[in-house]
Image 1 (cartoon, helix red, strand yellow):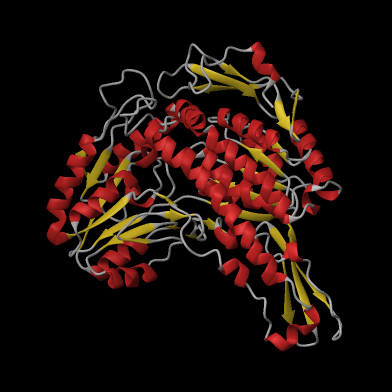
Image 2: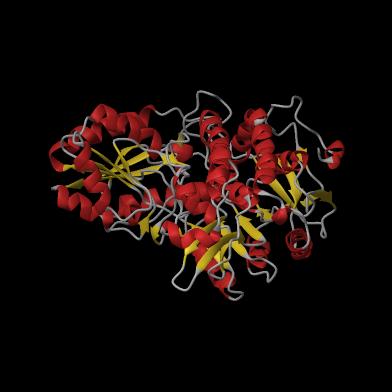
Length: 553
């Protein structure tokens, strides 16, 4: 279904053209419960190009009244509608259609994201669009093999352990990777049987309309998906709403604290994916060509606006000068420019506010004694846009603000270390624990280092994020996990059903795993559970192991 309100607005000339100042994209309605409806208020969000600084889009600003309508529609869909009661295999078919339609429109989606948030188009295609597609595909794979019911031998008799959808989900996503993060929440929630209210950030709402169109055309039942672009006030009302059963939030630590506070008032379940200050440890025996060839694109990826970016590079003192020289040369060689130019490697930051933030951190680093090895200001060209040069600081001390706080811009810190213990200490000396990497000629030793660093993900001689493994943070980087069977299970509640010794109850085949192998393995006599040492376990979930393709960054 396309937006009828689009006929009242200027549109891009071709389906796969991104918006610019001449082709204003204007949506006058909101997607609530899978339908386009007039907003309750008259406020609008203007989407401004970070490259041209011109308005390229306009959408309604959702209000509290719109949240109430969306929650009411979601509650009807969950409490009385078909989606939570639809067999997993049928939900997989619908979500599979969303994934296929997303694939068909991935270039349009990538260009729209680049136009509104400045992400370089080459990275948008890989990280924003195809990366999101991998999230949908991995979630489908997990859902096919997942065990929704399993027999278990109890102390007092046989048990049936059941996983049921958690309820209405509020999914609050940031502007930096809107579709990737939306997929990480929507895909498992929908597959689990949960209605979702998606709140995009006001800086980047245009791509969410494309996703809503795709979902409606895929056949989601009424009430299952609403999309409410809005700022923090409406977002706070949503996450604190008594009709919401679970909040999944991605954003900053301060915003995450506020979400947790508001959700706690209703005892609403919360998953938080917050910031990062990830370290790349280069050991003395590392192959520098391989290490720097991977670190550079994953430090400055998405203009530095990525929570998993390798923003702290740790170099051994004996090779520090060589690494500093090569990193500075690589930073200076990065192509800065129009995000829609395929040759661009670093585009503008999403808003003037973010540009000022990065420039303020650069000034702070200089005041504290760090040395600018590359960049350090606004580039001479382009003349318009919220650009910051790819910047590398050397001789950074661990107590400096630039080494401790998430900058969320193209500013990287190079920290020297004396020995391996010092490197581990520096890497661990952070409030964050989201990601990181180590580079060494000894793979087994690299794994030993990885085991010592308290982060949710860590890479050895590579940098990846695999959607079949759990993703999330230690320390202040978040609560809970996304991706894999672990992330899928976070959208379900556990129920234990106690049965008599002679229960003889058989599992429905389609509840043990929606795929052929899962269904066959699930069916069994619950009354026999005690004779099989609790057979059933989590085998179906574990069978999803392996790579579904990773997103670099």
